[in-house]
Length: 589
Image (tube, rainbow, N blue to C red; front, side):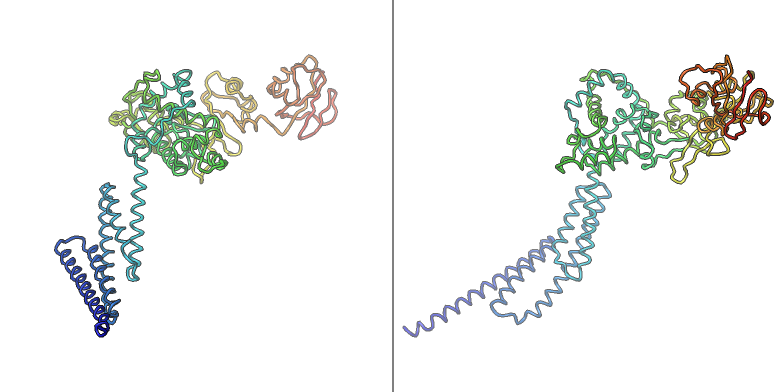
């Protein structure tokens, strides 16, 4: 009995080891069968190889635990080489998925593009990042990330579905603006709506290209009433009401002939660029509209004063914005409600089929009035004017210019081109280029510092006095501007220069100020007439409130220059003081 007890523990150990060996052999046989099945089924090689590798790895680890790791060095070398090959294959597969995603992207198939990018990124995550492929892994990760960002950026720029990005809210402020359009502003709204028809195809087409909400087409109704030449008190011009600096920022140039803020296509493209920039800044279209009206700087300052940093939507800022801006957004929303359902709000809105898209262009190289072009082509002047709204003076420039004419009228234009009279170049009182390199004042005067002149062609029977009265200048200023004297008078057909602005001030004023002693029975009007000086100017120079004046008083005669000096010293009739700045005239009694 005692001998049996001695061998029981040994027997139990042997049996246990035998069972373990059998189990290990079973696991290995199972792994080999799995590999064969994978090879026959032709499924994803990379993934199954990894499963195989994990199964074999588990068996080897268990064997080493039981029997030691005498063969570990050799197996480690083999496994290292195998793993390196597998990871390289993963990189190649990921690159294939990336190339496939690019092909889908070019076709515009966003859904499949993202699916392929997901597969490529999953393979990158499976790789362990061995030194040999670390750079490949980083490059692929960067490329995949860039593609994903590009796809999602594209999805944000596209308007998908029927829901608008601009919420059609209805509240007390919007209702108030609707009542205003129904009442005192009814004619304005209907007129603006009718004018909008000719611009709709062009503007909506540009909005669609940019991927921004098409409801923004109605913004010019609030801004300008769809008038291409609308000018605000803040010098904002055109359908989209650009001030000069913002227009320049978005590529709208100005010179003495053209102001592109009035060009419908160019100003629309600039407005879209501005709105997209604001949307990237604020992310909320109503806040964007507020910033478009009062400037992004003003809105940012209001946001910065908010006590809670996530209160930055329009209605959170509403009470702190300028009154005009606070009304601006509700007016726009009221417009959307009315045009969407005009009958509900008592409107019968009629549309026309006119469209600015129906035009063609032709180059011209002479100054012509748009009215003359329309007359010779037998089309309405309004059509030619709207098509070429950027022309500031309704004249084609004195250099080559591309003019727009109604579609299908090119042959007619070519046939009458030589019959359209060429117009003289007008005098620009102040013309400035928007280019930062060239800002200048153009005039007919020899000196830029002296201001500008208008011109007048003398007709038969006209005198210096009649011309001066017509233009509101003094005869003396007219004489000085044209170097005329009493002997050298006007001639019919001659062109004279009419001073204005700084020229007029310079010519009316003179370094010499005469002092005159008033005679008996002489009135202020008589003195003004004698020295050809306006009564108002005479009163201003002498601080006179009324028209009464007493004999013997010495008064100043502004701008008066003596043509000849009396003899020096005393005379029987009075005294003349010799002074280049002031002269005293003793009048006869």
